[in-house]
Length: 279
Image (cartoon, rainbow, N blue to C red):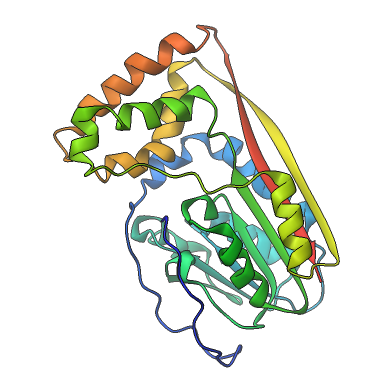
């Protein structure tokens, strides 16, 4: 999403949310993203384990995707009300199957999220890496909490792996750079110690921040391409002309595979920042 937004004016925290604007990038392919469902779900459950359940919680899940895991969270926390927000119509189209019993979903740009003092838990799993300017973003997330509220966030931090560096490099090649209008994907995720300092400045009395490496055994090194096609490469696929996308993908494959060991299974280490904080 890569946009900074100023918070909205104060509002009644129990009132319905005003419509939020949606802007590029891209829509998502739920089937492609779900090809590694079990692997992508592991950080979600680790993050959820950090949350301290309390009675009658009001929860918001920013970047809820299809809503399947939001349903799991809603039930595990026995929340009174949970709202899932996502910008992808394709993802949200699947969320109706999980709604009900206090869980609902609505479209929205999480970069524009603002809800003064409304929630007992603000939760976001693998979503806000698409939003720029994390210091003001986290200030808005903190402002959305009740006086005893909790913040739980997980963000990929694998931008220094060849799978990501290669995408950045290919996008900078003249053919693709020109087609992208000079767009360059920025990586807003901070170092873990920077988040710890930021949470302290925002007045959180307790916090847990860690960098965790998830080791994934994939069928082969080629599977790394399919993994990244479901996440980072989506940013380029939706920005490039349709006829140029296959060429980009071929060039990405050509540059990436020689950097990876040709082993079966292929071990793919993936770093993520997990953080939890409470007032």
